[in-house]
Image (tube, rainbow over all chains, first blue to last red; front, side):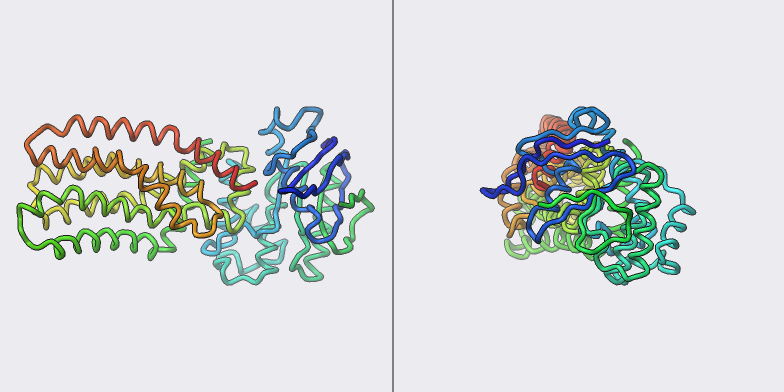
Length: 201
Length: 222
């Protein structure tokens, strides 16, 4: 369980949010809503540990995140709004190196299967440079299927996806929640997910 | 931990292999700079021999600088750096892997090319050996210190020019002792003192740089 207490974050002179508290139990998901520039991405980056908040505490499984950073990083999968892919590498290589950088084993068959499930047949060996925005997004999202994590933090995961892929992504998230995981996402789209919590910034 | 280090190194090697022009440019830049100087100062052998260590070393400094600008900026631009910072593997190890690759791609070719260029400055064989040895000890320092500069100027506009201004002064000790070793040998003095100091700088920079660089990268990501 992730617990957030009295979180405050300032960017320059502007306060993005203050006194933000919530808990995220297992099998639950939170949608973060807010206008453009309200600080949704910053909140996700604070939760992931990329940005230090001015005030407030993050607790993971009852322990402050600062004290169990390695466990929190293993439990967490953060996908930002960047594609985080190398244009010169193929989708397969991107996934393999991505797992390698986290010192996780990469089984070729598992990676292939993840790419196929996201509808990237016959694209596995094509440099990412030749893929469309939606296809790049799918390569990134394929990480959801290969990198085990309890908490998914997804920044605008539905961007650039077509109807079919949107439905598939919702099914993947639903599966993850079913298996005891939890998720935090920002999205402007209505999602075909079970009712979840919502935070407005 | 080692898996992360090797992956980070291998990934950059694969990328360098698909972007051959980038490191070949650095190498040819080295060749050009060291070739232009003799053309400028004239073909007097004793003068050429005198300036050779300095010219070759300055060429090495400038050419490693070329590869540094892109060391972290492409990873920063496409979000890979965020994923690296979130990895359970300490960021310093991943950074160390990138530094090693930078040296293999930008430093090692310079070391291998240097004796060839030294011949046209009429350096004696013994001094050529010392030149290679000094560059072998010195170029990893350039990669290690340069990575820190690249991390500090990450995300700044005009970061490239600032990087040069920031890093070149920090290269001075390596330049003095590196070129000094070859000059000492030319003058008939033992270059051992210079080489030992260069070795000490190498140990110091390779040990501390990945750690400090990873701290700078975390600040750049905020």
